[in-house]
Length: 152
Image (tube, rainbow, N blue to C red; front, side):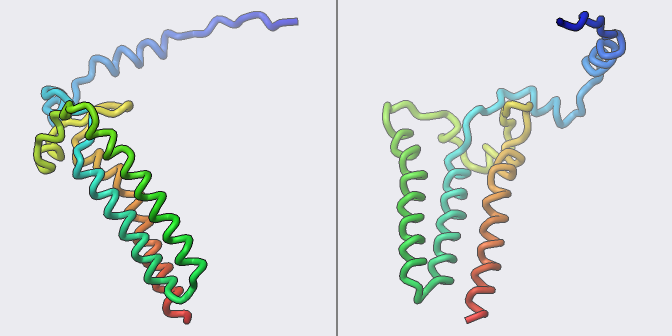
């Protein structure tokens, strides 16, 4: 009941792979690859993330003044945020081992290469990718809060 196996023509695919391997990377990529890439994020990126989410909670708190049920939900969200950010913070303090990335300044981390699953990029690009969506949510939340406040 099975279908006979077809022989795949891989000559074109192999030629494309070989051509891609022979290409020389751009100089900026070569400079990033020459240094040992960081594999852990700097604490400043986590602090920025925590500040963005705390700012979002402050915006919601200001927007929903007068509605006790909504403020109760904001308070519950604040507890979840504290657990979400506090647990990794507490676990990072256990064991006494200090990550070498944390000893560097944030500016130095942003200039150095950072390794991801998809390749090496600068720390600035990694931080931008991590903080872009929460920042957009913060801006959208501020806009919605403004609309809610103005409609009262």
